Structures are given as C-alpha cells and as structure tokens.
Length: 213
Image 1 (cartoon, rainbow, N blue to C red):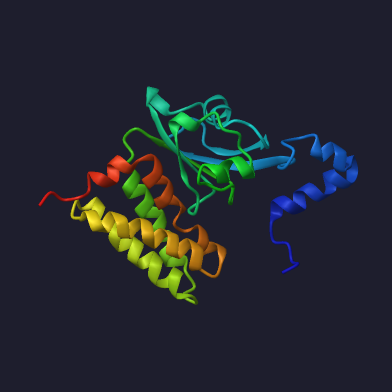
Image 2: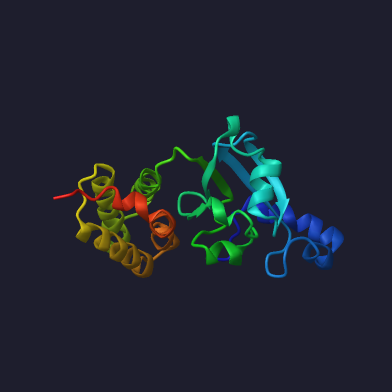
C-alpha cells in the first residue's frame, strides 16, 4: 500500500524539493495544490495533454485552452475523471477544477481525462459506454461490482432501445446506489458515476426511453 505508481506524483517531487513546499502550495487552491495534467478529447478544437493550475474553471479549460466545440457546435456536457467520472452539464462550466468541487457535482478528478460532448450526444448511450468498460474491467471478486455492473449495462440497453418500464428507472437508481456503497474497491464504488450524473442532469433522456403501453 505504500508503493507509488503515479508518474505525476514522481514528477512533482523534484520541483518541490528544489523550490519548497510553500512554492508548491502557492499554486492551485487551499485544498488542491499544484498543477494537474489533463487529456482533452472528444468534441473539442484542441485535443491533447495540457497542464493547468488546480482551481482553473472548466470554462477556461474548455473554451480558452481547448478552443471550444468545433464548427460552432454547442457544448452539452463534460466528463471528467476517466470512465468512472461524472458528466457535468454545460451550465456548470464555471465550477473550479479541484478535488472537492468536482466531487460536489458528482464527478471526480480521477485519471485526468476530459471528454467534451456536443449537443448531438445521447447521454444514456454515453453512460452505457462507460458502464460497459467498468463491467469488462471488474475483477469479479465481489458480487456488487461483478453482477451489478452487468445488470446496470442490461438496464441501460432497455432505455437505449426504448423498451424500459417505469420500474426499470427506479431499479436503475437503486442498483447504482448498491454498487456504489457495497463494492469492495474504487472501481465498483465509482462505476455508477456516469449513470448517476446523467440521471441527475439529463433525466429527460432516460424518460424518453420508457415505452408507452
């Protein structure tokens, strides 16, 4: 448990020794010091790796550095943190990019991935894509993650195929909580984030997948 495998952590050691802790703490926010490397991808003009100070706003990161959505497209959502991150709607672009602020809106810093999605993105399909990844990555050791991610994937398919029932929507939300609270490791505990965040901010897209009897 004491082994460090994060290259970004190693990269910070020499500058901190050279310049001191006060210098490092002067960058970023009170609780999230230093800089962070992000991988910008998706529907954005400037893709690639960027290093920014903690506390930068999502708007500055996406619009000033990333150049915004290409061809005058409209931004719909941003997913931060990799496959287990939450999807943040366009109206929250002014939040600070730090550990606490991202957690408050249902996302994470995670691996530093930033996926930009335009107005044509189907958020249920986005949630299903990432859930399928978590399902394939599950080690299978604990039932909540092994079975839960599989069940969540199947439920999301119902909404995508417009074959879901109202009870499926309630089951989807309940299953997310069970997987999040009962899984043994971080993969299962964060796997429902894409589903929970898209339910919170894009609920109408789930309701469109409920069939009319």
